[in-house]
Length: 342
Image (cartoon, rainbow, N blue to C red; front, side, top):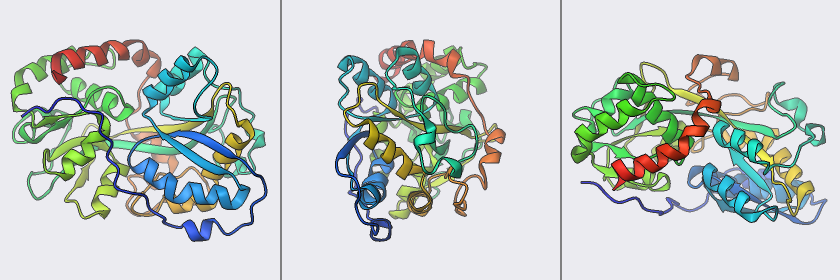
C-alpha cells in the first residue's frame, strides 16, 4: 500500500540527557539565538543538551526551527536578507548551494574559543563542521533477514516492506543514488532507479515525507528503509526492533556544518551557539546513547556503537560530488513526486 506524502513531524518529546551538568556555569551574556535544526533526533538532542548548555555558559536562550536542509535554503532566499533564523545546519549539498546563492555571512573561525579542539580543515570562512553522519540501511531483524546491499531494497522480501522517501534530504538523495548505481546508474544518471521503481512500485509498503519515516517504521507500516545511524540508534533506545546494515558497496558518510545566516538578528550569539555545539561537554553528551552523534571535538572519545572509531575513517566511506548533484536535484525531486510519490 502506498501512503501519500505527508508533512508530519516525528517528535517523541525532548530529553534532558546531561542537561544538569552542562548548565552549571554562571550566565555571562544576555540574549537569544534562533537556529534551524533537523527534525527528529537532532531537534530532540539539541533541546535537551545544547539549549541548557548555551544558557548555562553564555546566558543565551536557544530557539529552534525544525527544517530540513533544502527548506532552510529556500526559506532564507525567500526572506531576502531578513532571515527568520540566525544559524543554518546543513549537509554538503545544501552548504554548497547556500554559498552559491549568498545566504551566509562570511565567518571568522578565530572567534571560536573551541576552534583548536576540532581538526584542521573543519572550519572556514563560511562555517564550521559540527558532526559527521553515516547513512545505510535500517531494518527490523524480527521480520526480515538483513539486506546485503542497496539494490536489495527493490527486491523481495524487502521491497514489500520498504519505506521510501525522496530527495528532500541528504540521506534520501545519497541513498537513491547508491540504489541507482547498483542498477548501472551514477551520480548524474538516476534513470535506472526510476526504471526499477516502475517495476516494483505496487509492492512498496509505504511512501512518506522524510520526517514521517521513523514514525512509520515505529508503527510497523514499513520494516526496512534507508536512514542515518542517529535515527537508528534513537529508535533502538526506545525499544524499537531495528538494526543498521552497512551495505556491501559501502555506507555513505558526510560532514554536517553550521553557518551564520546573512542578515542574522543575533550574529554574536550565533557564534556563541556554534562554539557551544563543538565544545567538549556538549559533544561528549551528544556522543552518548540515544543520540550517538559522530563527534568532531578531538577531546571526545567515539562511542562503541558508532560506525567509525575516528574521523580518519571517513575516507573509507562513500562520498559524493555535490557540484554534480546540486544542479540536478530539483529535477529529481519533481520527477520523484510525479513518478513515485503519486
